[in-house]
Length: 442
Image (cartoon, rainbow, N blue to C red):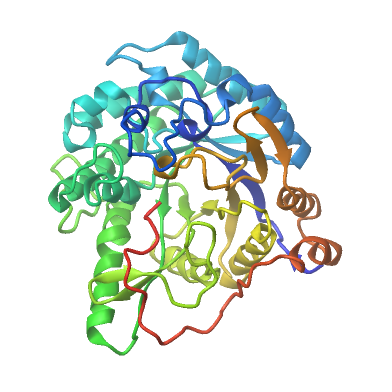
């Protein structure tokens, strides 16, 4: 055995807005309708048509041997008007999770994955405290409807990425550029998670509930330069650790704001880690490490970062850990096999007891402002015909699942020919970072 995964379970992940298709009235459908907001002019109305192809996609999951599937719900379908729930949409999701269970696949359901109903966006979404109660009402309805088939929930996906891209950089809906507003959004998302966590446990006392946190190392370009070190530490705190502490423990530290209604406690049953890349920091600028292996979107491929983060998370937030997203855009499927191997190796190297690894993503998907260009899927999709094709990396992933690890034969067939130069633990380059905004915060 080239890599023994022990008890680590492998799954795949998707998000509703990115795969379902259709004309649900979401913040993203509205955003994409404005020319110039999405790079290739596409919209989520096509995506992979998963809404109409659930049976086909479940058959593909079974063919790959997948037993854990992270999926999202489209809030705008379930509650198309404020306070009005659509029984047909709810029935569709009930049928989907029921079919997954019948196929021997455990669903992990995400309740909010960057997707707001249009009516909520009109009201200011997560800039208003009332949204917390509105979100909990939605969660209450969904959990009651799906509880016979689902007992594992992610309340909110990557709250820091949503707040940063939508309210600092202004590249996501609603296109605001206000750091104070972003901090308010992060605070209210934390309140939303805590109240949703409590609500879910009232309905399902034994449910497993967590948050998918986007994490990355922020490394000083010159480790002995105090300015670079301070910049990296500040970015890491503001982007991920302040929000993480608020959601996990109800500890709201500046610039986030708590309230008298939230007490400190433990508000997670597992920690979800989404990992893609790292940030290379020089002063107040963050960029990509020079001369590093990169994927199709220009993100550094740095497996050792996952090792480092898992050690930090296990120390700061004890309990079960799932890698709820990890993957790479690779249009030619030429280095994804190496990427998967290196990151699974990184998990093993961490010494941390990670329960699950969900590859991002199951199929290609509509990648937010990047549109249909990036190809993340183990299963490739022809968007014009909606035909699905299992990639060679998908075949390898199925082989890993079947063997609970990477065999010597699998390594020789798929990993060795990979074009990636990704190497776990590659020495750092002492050069300063390239002066550019750096990899998008997903």
